Length: 361
Image 1 (tube, rainbow, N blue to C red):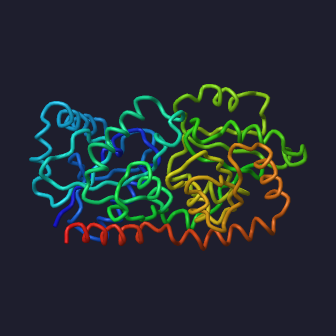
Image 2 (image 1 turned 30 degrees about the vertical axis):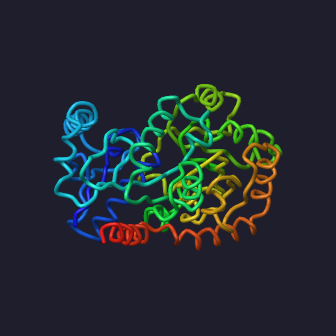
């Protein structure tokens, strides 16, 4: 019984969902060769590139065009494409799911419902359309954390039996990463620069550290510019913040070393469905400071200091504690490394195949 997986995100500029789709598909195909194909007509996954398509432009454009045609013109065309498959696992890039082929999907987060102000109107509309057309009608759903599962049950009125929690994974490269070398020790943030990630609060809290700590530890920010981030970008590029280093988009191959080289990882996001960077930091044996909201305490377990992401004072205190107590850092790093074993892509693939087998009988 073959399954078609929507991998449209591999053709787009994307962060978390692209990361999930790429590594998840690789793991599924390795675990069950020949059983999982990628839509739209993606025969090779290419090299992971969050800043653009994984495929060359000549291969990307026809596939994007095919997606748009099936979404807007030949709405029954997707039924013909999916006819040979027992199931189509779709993403929100599919605006009109097939009528005859059963569908499933992964729920990554419910931010458009919980924090609508942190998304564009277009994103909110797209997610609500996806919920109405796919999530509420799917044969089964995967949630990337138990917190996300509970959000979906509560906010979308989906029956609990339809949703299974299956944690996302971390690439093996993070578990064995050699630390990158920089001129000074550093705190690290990695993620898109956008309102939900709360980078403004991080910059403000970092500024209030004791001058001795500011002199000793840099703050390194890695990630592409997202929506509504003009003021944050202005602060990142300000000449008055000499100990803050904004790296922009960092190629995936360089990220494990950047994580492993950090003194601590700081991620004060307002809401996450899974929180890849936290899991990646723990896999790289780095102590974590993160928010006490959404799924982040669930993912971090006992491998992090958690804070109120609305409180600058709490974040400043947590960074101070982390930097001044190396024994605590080491303890948290070791606990986080043990916790991160839950986030292996091999394990995610095994559980996902069990999920699909259950749907297909």
